Image 1 (cartoon, rainbow, N blue to C red):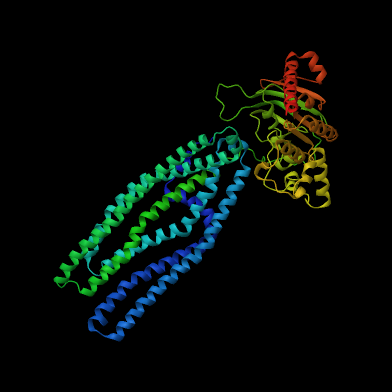
Image 2 (cartoon, rainbow, N blue to C red):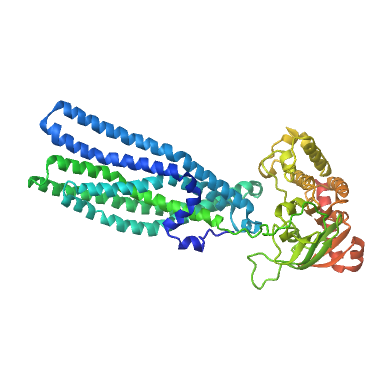
Length: 608
């Protein structure tokens, strides 16, 4: 599984360059975001005008004890406060919709990317890591764009402008305020080095924790059956404790920068107060100017103190961006070739020409899992694939539809290399049914007609295809469900039995009306009587359909016109069942093993 380590590209990028990767999503809404930032800046400038207005009130009306001008001065301050509040409201109004648009665009593109990436990618990545990136990280990016980015930019500008205005009253006070802020930049640099690492670690650990939750929920029946709930809890507790420790380290780093952000302005206030009193005593500053200076310094205190929070927010957003783009940067190795061949129809001639396959993480000295497969299926022919466990049967069935690509040789359909065909055509002509039947949280009708998107599922043709597929798969039990074929199946079909799930998965493959049907032991969970009924119905379907069937039972072998014997990644014999029994000792051994397994299962069913 994926170790959650950052890619080399994201490691090399600086924080600004990493965040600039968001521009394709931000650019369409940049106008409204800019207006939001402008509103925030205008509000900040208004807040900086309040101390200047107070200086006028203190120096004029209050010093001269004129009632009406004091009221006018108070009204002016109130008006400025209302203006600042209006700008805050405008900022939120401007940025709310654009930030949501960015989140929507990133999330849909992320999901689309996951759908396009090959099965090999999903073999390496934990589902919890992908889920945390899609939900948690993209949500964090949206909040940063709407809140963190704008406030960080505006508060920095506010500090720069406000600090410049401090020199308006006296250069000495401005210098003291500026010099005392220098330690903040040093601490900010140290904070960046430490917090960035902790932020990445925390988000990766949160993804691991999400994976554990997902695994335990999906495997709840196994955990309960074996009484291993405490084991799962202890594993979860260890991971949660590790995440807690990382979050505590983050909080300590955050607390450290906050300490300096609170301490240095307080020191600056104290030093400026001493200097201001001395300047006032020397007649170099008036009381009104000193009052206005501290009013301005007070206005600047929040922007200064917020820098720590906003900076940590920035680093969290950068980490989230890195994590999201690690998936976006993954290369889709199974795509349409630039000159992909369109094949609207297919005769169903499937062939393996010297096909080799090895998984990406296989060692350099390991033999190929499939080591030169040569096999050809004629149109309308049914071929059973038999072999001992580990011989490569299931892996072979993943190659025709390009769930994986061969690492050597080729797989052809009607003489055309499947890598040169359009994927939409290829996967319309070849359908699969797996031993581990996967169903979706949707109605029975939607699940069965999944491979026929061109049909109106509730139209006459859709109903006909649905009923024929259910009949062939002996899945009439759906009519006894609460809402018949409109009954919504629970997550992964766990509300159904294993045999029911397999029958619906088989119906889905049949309903796709492919020219080639690849079945990976799709009847393993059926009882003997139901299996016989399904096989009888399948014979009619397979009369005009090329079929490659992984056989784990002698009865499945009986469906086939020919049998291919797979041994250590190679096809060592091809022929009829009777011919292979007569000529291949290994075939007799495999068939004997299948018969023993079938007999054991029948005895177990009889015992129940």
